[in-house]
Image 1 (cartoon, helix red, strand yellow):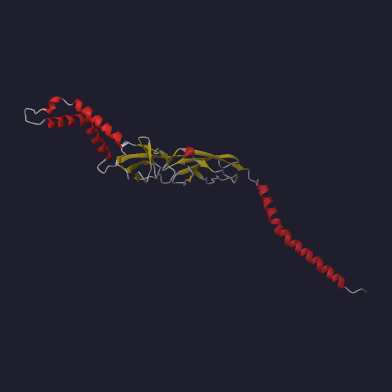
Image 2: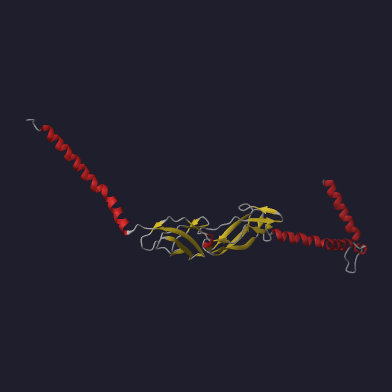
Length: 260
């Protein structure tokens, strides 16, 4: 392998020699020797390659590390608010090579990465890599159109508005009433299907709807009868016990009565 490299070097030197004007080896009017002229001609020939090497050194940086500023950033995209900190997993690709976070670069999130807004991201090369990338992503307001409302149990008509509290969940996060949403009701007094409207506030927008059933309540007479039936065991029970006790006493007295 070393012999092959030597032959290549000799071939390059020969080509450069053949390309150098013969006048370069003669002393010029300023008294420079032919060797000086040949050296200058050689430098002119090698100049493009030297510039390329200098550019490579600039790209690698002062410490010899590879600059990541032209790498492709993957894994950053806008996300929807769910009340949790957002720290997406980021990967870099540089000349089709995948770089690894923690080994080839570090990631820093700046600003509020919970509430809606723009989050700044700084990616800094490490190890064999240098340079930085300034980028970011956006946290969008939570859209309640994508929220879910738990099933609401049937309610019994009372003559008053019925306002059962819903459980609202968005992206796996349970939202808080009067912080993330407000609730209003329609047709929630009489028997039938009532509607519940959840409207986003604060960090949430949009609406979500749910329904629940209102069952017919007992009529006034039926309600009194139901109350009587409910109280009957408490009334009949003691009376029955007293009657049984009286019968036992009478039987006992009858047995003790002397025969004539």
